[in-house]
Each structure stands twice: as structure tokens, then as C-alpha cells.
Length: 337
Ligand code: NAD
Ligand code: UD1
Image (cartoon, rainbow, N blue to C red; front, top):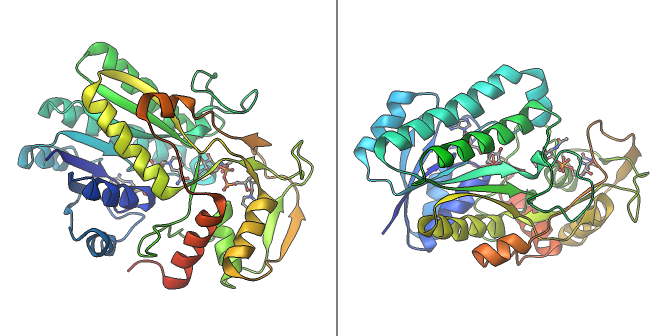
């Protein structure tokens, strides 16, 4: 049974990936500093799968701590989620983002190299496409960034491609996520945003449970069918399964691959709002506001490479994504403790 280290494994996407890994028969070790998540997530993973992963409360900035994990365990591959992810915050405190997402990641790659563990799945983002020239977005489209968070993703991709050039034994999957939403169908794990959410679906969830008054729709004058922004929302469980397929591929192939993880479908802000209204069974108030600076009109994935290379495609539709988000919201009014 292959042993997989999951950094950021108590976080939103990490926890769902741990569940899928365990269910696929892998042995999972979680590393997280609990900056943006709770240790209680491990009990939830155990409730779903029957197995509680071994846990290290370790920071990826702690080189010794990383070395110790690799010395104490025979790790076959790493899935690397740990990092900061708030775009607006990254503009305010860029050095903190570069330290955590770049220095921390380089520490991890060094520890892997020392231990002879050269198989990695990395959390990148569709943000590396900047303002794409057209949709659907293919992996060979030009890359650029508009904020420090996006730059940390692109820089990690570059670092890892250089590592693969320097040593052909490495296998690296650069997974470019589109917009992950939803929660595990059990309602036991899901996204717990810190403070007022920036992202659309967590915000709508708070409107639905009455914590926030109305949705602010950022612009209805985009060149899209209803004028509101269009995105490729993907169920977090589908995304997690994409990691299992990517891991299997990485264990059999050397070198670096960039792969989109999206559904290939775009939904507008108002379409998502209406799907959520169906899910929670009530009308949700909204107001049209100014465009949000930095937003693009539309962003959705070409999914052909993921299908051809990994044999993976997303299965849940937008309605299921909203239903599972609502189920998690209702069952966890205070988050996961
Ligand atoms: P999350 O915040 O829920 O999970 C990240 C986890 O990493 C948290 O549990 C946090 O405590 C941990 N962490 C942060 N810094 C750490 C450090 N220095 N040492 C150890 N642990 C640390 O975020 P998520 O939504 O699950 O995202 C996971 C990854 O996917 C991130 O790298 C993020 O940038 C990337 N990503 C997320 C999205 C999204 O919409 N959620 C989209 C594209 C890419
Ligand atoms: C944002 C990040 C992106 C990151 C992604 C996933 C920015 C500029 N981009 O993308 O880097 O990879 O999250 O984490 O922050 N919207 C509203 N009202 C709201 C919130 C959002 O109308 O309260 C609209 C937005 O204008 C957009 C859509 O909903 O059209 C989706 O927004 P969001 O969930 O924040 O994701 P992205 O902007 O795609």
C-alpha cells in the first residue's frame, strides 16, 4: 500500500482528497499547521472512511520538522495543498505569501529530494492563465498573473519544471483547479471560510442561512449571456478524485505535466444563485453592484487533456454542488470544531 503525505490535509480540498485516498486503498499521512483548519477534521475523515490518518502538526517553513516526517515514514508520494490562498490579502501582504507559498514549498521539495521521494502532485490554479484570450482554456495557453497569490502558483510551477529538468527521476503533476465548490455528500467535511467569504458560493451559503443580508453581484454588464461573470465550478469531490487519477499517472510516468481540473461548463453568477435557491428552497436576495477589480468575464476549462491522460472527468452537476454546500452549511453552523 503506497504511503502518501498530504500537506494541508485538514483544509478544504485536502480533507476531501484524504477521504478519496483512503477509500482508494492508500495509507495517508497528514501534515498541517492548522492555520486555516481544525484537527477535528481528522475525526470527520475517520467517520467517513473508518480510518484516522496519522497527523503531524507541522509548518512547511520548519525544515527540521519536514525532515523528521520523511525520516520516520517511508513516503512514496506527496500531494501538496498547504499554502495561503486569499487573492486580496496577497496584495496587502505579499512577502508573507511568498514566504509561505514559495519558501515553504521549496523546503518541502528539498526534504523530498533528500529522502529520495520524487513524486508530487501540486495544487496550482486557473489563475495562472491571467486574462485568457478565449474559452475553453487549454493547458498550452499563455500564462501570466495579476496578483502575488497567482504569482506564487506560477513560480511553483516553474520551480517544479526546473526540478524535473535537473533530475529526470521526478514526476510532477501541476493541477490547475478551476472553481472548487460544494462539500462531501455526508455533510461532515466542507469549506469553512475565515470571516466574510470572498468567493461566490461560500457567500451565497451565508445569505441562505441568514448570516449575510444579500448577495452583491459584481457586475451585470459583462459580454456573457446574462451579463454576470461566468466560471467553471467543480464539485470538490470530483476535484479530489482528479488527484487520485493524477497520482496514479505520476507513479507511472516521469516528468512534469500541467492539467486543468474543471468540468468544461461555465455558469453565470445568477445561474449559480438560482441553483442555490433550488437547493435551499427559498428566494435569495441580491443586488447588482460595480464590477470587482481584477475580475474577468469568463473562465472555463478545456478538459480534454485530463480525460486523455488521466481518464478523469467531473461528474457532479451544479445542482448537486449547491445541494451539498447547503447540506454542509446546515449541519455545521459553527464550522468544524
Ligand atoms: P485551505 O486553506 O482550506 O487549506 C490549506 C491548508 O494548508 C490549511 O489547512 C492550512 O492550515 C494549511 N497551511 C497553510 N500554510 C501552511 C504551512 N505553512 N504549513 C502547514 N500547513 C499550512 O485551502 P484549500 O481551498 O483547501 O486550498 C488548497 C490548495 O489549493 C491551496 O494551495 C490553494 O492555493 C489551492 N487552490 C485552491 C482553490 C480554491 O478555490 N479553494 C483554487 C485553486 C487552487
Ligand atoms: C477567485 C480568485 C482566483 C481563485 C479562485 C478560486 C479573485 C480575483 N480571483 O476567482 O484567483 O483561484 O477564486 O479560489 O479573487 N462574485 C459575486 N459576488 C461575490 C463573490 C463573487 O458576484 O460576493 C462573482 C465574481 O465576480 C465572479 C464569480 O462570482 O464572477 C466567482 O467569483 P469567486 O468565487 O470569487 O471566484 P473567481 O473570481 O473566479
